[in-house]
Length: 371
Image (cartoon, rainbow, N blue to C red; front, side, top):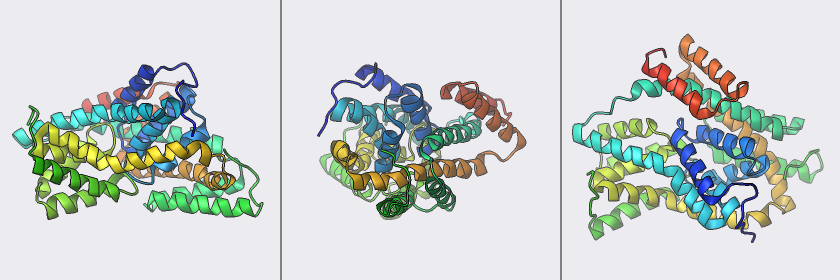
């Protein structure tokens, strides 16, 4: 096992945590949008990790739990070991958890979603541009042969068809392994006051969300029907309308859709319940990710693993672009939204604007009613 106690480049641990705090504050749009921001900050701008290494972390993160949170843990682990990984994941989640907790208080107090819908509407086209930009940056580095291009296109089609991402990555890796083994592949890519929760309540809340976390495969909106079945149909902790509004509130914030657990936990037991539910839901995925990170240095030198990952890397490119297509079909519905999307891509690709600046322009456009 190799544990890095020193950064590869000039970034301190506090600097790394500030970076993840920033990414967690502007990661609107869910999983792939967050990965796009993270790739831009960690790989393109600061070169903290190699592209292939970053994509391996994204791949591992897809297995169980929120892959955006898992990717944050992977980056932190590669730079500062287990402590760096856990702190990076926690700081990354902090803005979303804090915002959902605050919005949940106002919602359950007044039973209405706070009026930030208009500003958020303008973020959609910018998020689509951000994902396209990331897909282009990743693709030009890892799609280096006809085989890789074919895998990327197949993954794009599968992503548009909403095939589970875990299956897409597994199939891409298996195909690459088979082709490389036969020598057909030509390249190789390395309540606002803190509530006191009774002991029985702690056990029930923790067990409920931990069990969901154990089967939280595929990330993203896979979590929504699972939580609905358990929280609404099974335990009756939320009504159907409250659950729908919780999904909406979760989407109004940066970070992963997994913060829906924060909303539900707050309703059950205030701030303590919000924190406990979030931690329990993500714990299984983070524990698995720690194990994979611990073995990563050994795994990436294994020729069999390398063959497998040669197919995974272009598949991630296809999945990133498919996310842009799926989000774009809902966000780019007017000519003004399309124009904002094109302008955002120009800001990011040609003018090299920071994602936060482009998102601010989108929010302003939405707030002013231009989108």
